[in-house]
Image (cartoon, rainbow, N blue to C red):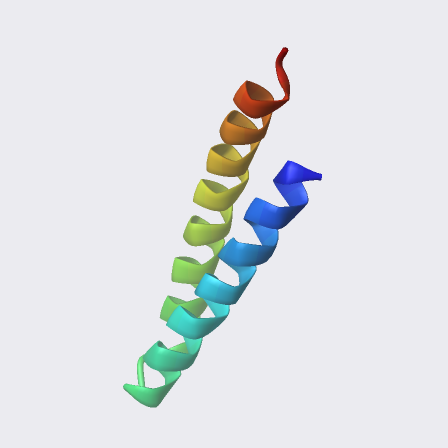
Length: 56
């Protein structure tokens, strides 16, 4: 459950960053690359924090 909360927050952040980049007229392939990199960081960070929090 903790992992889903972290990922939901990251998805909102990634959406905001992508929206900002679109407003700045950045190329779509660059926005996609940034989004994929941020999603990878989100999964690694969320899994690490969730694993540490769920341990007794």
